Image (cartoon, rainbow, N blue to C red; front, side, top):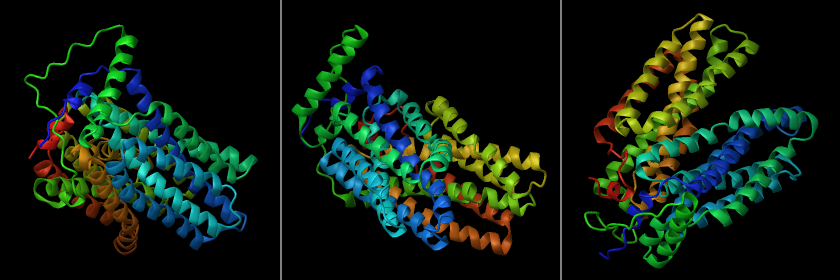
Length: 452
């Protein structure tokens, strides 16, 4: 194999600077707008039903079209990112979402809106995965978990943002403005990414473009020296493992030998995330109503319980790099499993509220761990986006079918059974992660690539 300059190690030694903040800013803003467009669909649907544009069946098609788009985007975005580069994949999908969200604000009927919702979903599904996976290639390993968690923290303000903006925009202007706002914001992100989002030097080296990687890195090093008024120490190659230019890796390597183990663990981690999210968050209001709480109060209680989401991600960002990844993730799953059961047997309102708040707090710590931190770290550079994309696509498929399973259990056996089944599945996922996952905390991406 051809040996390259140790580009990865040079990136890892850089202090966090304006360069990192710009990459963080562009990706986190894009994730925030993606979430805004996703959640604003829920706000828009209520208006479309009231004005006669939509009905329950068209609402279902509107929601499913986004999920289908997410699935396609997760898969295709990985191939584009690994073959054409992180920058091109990221900017291409910003443009897709920006254009189709803007066009969606002019549609003549619900059928066209559903069609453009699917096209938006393709860009959004790819954007989420490409954003998180690309970010790991720029950040030093000692703080990679913390900074990836911060991305998740910014992105997860979108439900509250879309609800707040939606109330004003839909009441005083038009539902169409929601899509126009999202589209224009995405096109702004596309413009800024052209100026500040460089191609990953790790990806360039992997493609044999060492001179381009060297050029980017020298520019970044010069910026950091000027910004901090320092001289970076000459890079010592001795004692460090050199980057190895990987072969052009086939997608099927994900299913061979030790890569298969990583693929299965990543799928397990994301299945646990999706069955938790789509069981707990979607059914909280229904379960509250079934417990005899009136609808208005159940909506208020749900809003209070969901405060645990941004708080959980904020705390995760503070502590995630202090604990081994496998222990952190598997412990969270067992805590969620236990809290879910105790939540389901409560009858007093204060107890339902307290357990619900704790459950959402730990659930979103796990969401942050799974989607923003652990899964993007698992893969070698030449397979990172396809690996992340494939396992995210499998997670999306599970998300499509989970609500039906929950509905059957809830109807036939009640909410306690739902949470017992969920708890058993989460404990199984926790054991798989703990015993078969690889440890990635504070390990360079090049060393993670070679872990057995």
